[in-house]
Amino acid sequence: MQLAQRLNSVTEPQTIRMAKMSRELKAKGINIVDLSLGEPDFKTPEHICNAATKAMNEGFTKYSPVVGFPDLLEAISIKLKRDNNLEYATNQIMVSTGAKQSLYNAVFSIVDPGDEVIIPTPFWVTYASQVQLAGGVVKYVKCGIENDFKLTPEQLEASINPHTKLFIYSSPCNPSGSFYTRDELAGLAEVFKRHPQVYIISDEIYEYINYTGHHESIAQFEELKDRVVVINGMSKGFAMTGWRLGYMAAPREIIQACEKLQGQSTSGANSITQKASVTALLSDLAPTYKMVEAFKQRRDYVIGALKKMPGVKSNQPEGAFYAFPDISHFFGKSYGEHTITNDTDLAMYLLHEAHVATVCGSAFGDGNCIRISFATSMTNLMEAMERIKQALEKLQ
Image (cartoon, rainbow, N blue to C red; front, side, top):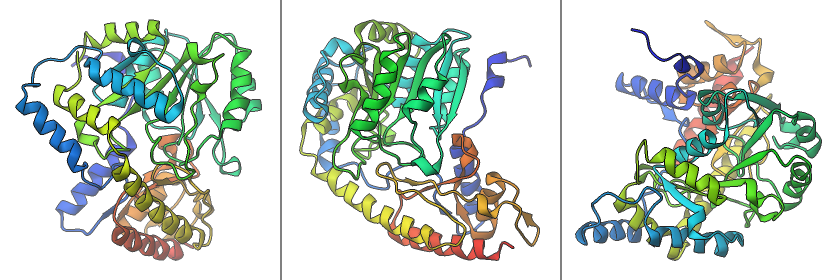
């Protein structure tokens, strides 16, 4: 069977692969603690579920407009002004079946074959694959743990050339949890001002999972706003992963291009989810803040436990729900039949020896690290950290 050549440029995401392997081992009766997937373990708040039921009872079960229902676009506009001090008209906003589709639409609307796209590492696994599917050329810029995995203006300036078309990043970052301050974004903005051909995709899906108290968006700099695409969604901040709704705010021309693309794929997003999302965005955010407080307690525990493990280095994530420790100290060490030569070996060792599922850092562009999700119960985290500690101590 001769399938499309473009499929050769992408592989199954490591996050999904590790979750799959974890399920297979669980099916065999092995007690696995799964720290591989980034999904809140909280239920969707009751008032949002009630809004969905109300929408169904009122007949909102038909096709929706490609860009989204007008009341949801208005709710997103209100949210952007309320939380981010960003002014976007409803015709500069579009909803999709998840933030991943919003990203896909944006990338395919901007990138032509041969265009260079700068992605600072570590990065969410899907960015590079989407660029490659669009025919773009990914240019990685390594951001190490010594700088909290964040890009400096000097690195950005050095990476831009006449072929650069797009820059993609997330803040708070998946997988590092790093958060760009306003001053740090201002430094990057000064570089972008000198290169007007470069578009910017700012993935802000973890906006509410933020331990600093205030989110910052690069779209706040007016000189850049006409080439910034803000990506966000309902999954992380409202525990609505299965509801599948993301949105973007962008210049009108990009919204029109994305509407054209989406009209030939999924068309409008789920009508019931859209109505529930209006309620989520405009209601009291107390359930979200309660969830974030639990994540913060888990973060403090996990990072504290990792820092007590000899050979493990970790930054202090200021957002999202991941730890991204540097485990390169263990390369070259072994235990029994296991020899650790890279991050993948270590992730597999932890899976089979400690029965803890993590994700290798190379999937995110940094082979010195592994990603640990703390979007699970404290009981699971305590068990997992003890298992990891004991497994690492065996490596000599």
